[in-house]
Every structure is written in structure tokens, then in C-alpha cells.
Image (tube, rainbow, N blue to C red; front, side, top):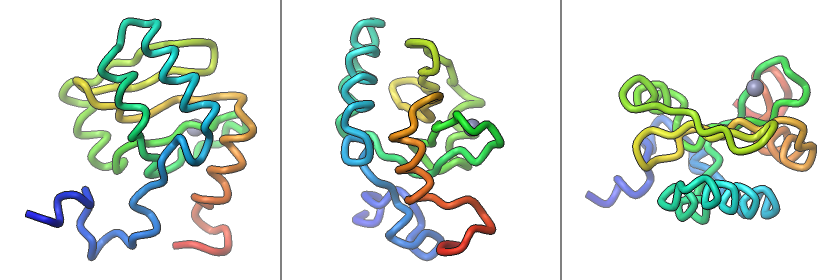
Length: 130
Ligand SMILES: [Zn+2]
């Protein structure tokens, strides 16, 4: 089943939006996230950070928000309903996980990531995408 590696239906999702590795988008945050998860005793999740993908940015109104989805938002909601939990790591940094899967990372006051997200995932209505 070769298409499974894409994680999405390729007819619905252009390749450009399949996701970018967090460690390419914001290496510093990837390192922090992994360290914090490790310190919180979340070894499996800490290990998952290296391959964590930023699939969609949060488009809420909070200008300090740099949260992002690590899975398709639709699937995130499904995972969340079943086994969701929030792990608060630091002020402005928490991870929403379902089982051993990182579903969403809630980040605030992280301008580097915020700018990278805006470049990569313009909100609806902005020129460029969608
Ligand atoms: Zn947000």
C-alpha cells in the first residue's frame, strides 16, 4: 500500500501541504520540545519530535500564537476525541497527544516559528495559496 506513506489522499492534498519537518522549520524549538518532553518523562513523544511534521498552522486571532497541527486537522479532531491529552511543558509550550502520537503543539511567543508558519501556511484570504 505505497500511498500510505503520504498520510493523505494525494488527490485532495497537493504535495506542498503534506508537511514540513519541524526541525527544518524551527530547529531550536524542535530541540527544546524534545528536551522538555524527555524531562517530562514522555520518552516516546520526545523521540517522535525528530520526525514531527508541521501539517497546518493555527489560524486563530491571537497574534502570539504559533501553534500548529502535526497531523491533518480533521484527523487531529478524531484522534483527540479518542485518546487526547495535553502535556504542559513550559509557559507557552504544550503538546496535545493521542496515545504515542503528537497531534498538535501549542506554542506562544515564538516569533521565529510564527514567521515561518506565516510564510508556509498563509491564512485563508491572503494571497499566494489555496
Ligand atoms: Zn492559535
